[in-house]
Image 1 (cartoon, rainbow, N blue to C red):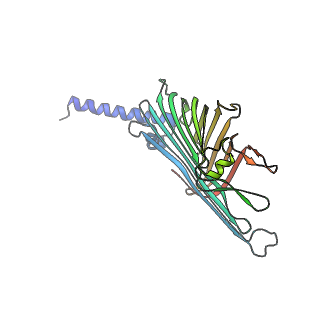
Image 2: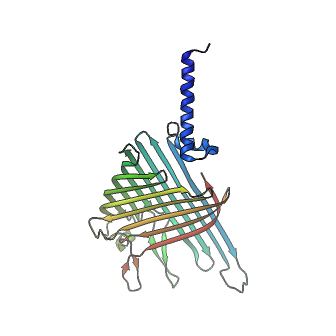
Image 3: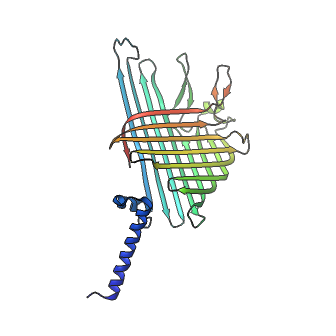
Length: 313
């Protein structure tokens, strides 16, 4: 027998389902993809959002008595992973970004050389500060290093040991506010930031090429900005970017350290894509040797174009 209570419960359930579906359709504008948008936007059931891109590009060439010239053989391999995990429930949010890459080339004349190597991790917790969910009180942790030893190659064929895992490594802790303009773009601002530069290798620490001290740890205190952009530009093109700026109050605050990473992925088929990575770094503390025996800072640029296996999740 159907009672008034049963009818009321049924109407409440129907109203709840209708409301959720209507909200998702309004936000996404894709009724055919309603099930996916519920998984992303209905945080009452799914408080974690995860995703990313994994890519591996491989190339090989071999020459024999080739009139146009070139190395007898060459191999190149580049791999990268860029992923995120975002938690949101009530007034709390926790965003995590992981960016890893490693690549190498091997030719007959030059031998084995690295072409890419980094490990970046950013974790940010926020507590909602305004009713419109735009501003958050936030704390941010950032860590940077690499996987293997790195060398600078000279014109005479010799090489100089210049970096290694935890040489350098950068650890950053920051307190500030986060402004979430949209679900794919946010800016974190902090006037209170501690940054440590770690150089665990004794020989590199003595050269003072990553910090103006022979100590293994160099501390800085200053202001920090972190901006993230992560969006599907079209159904087949995805762009992610992270910009970090740091100014040291203690020494030359006008010399702002810049870390800017960019990754554009253009899907060709389900498991085939073109990836373009463009990274720029400027840190006044990072020095490179010159022919005059001095050390100077330079803008560091890295561009990698690859076509190969790619999986987006």
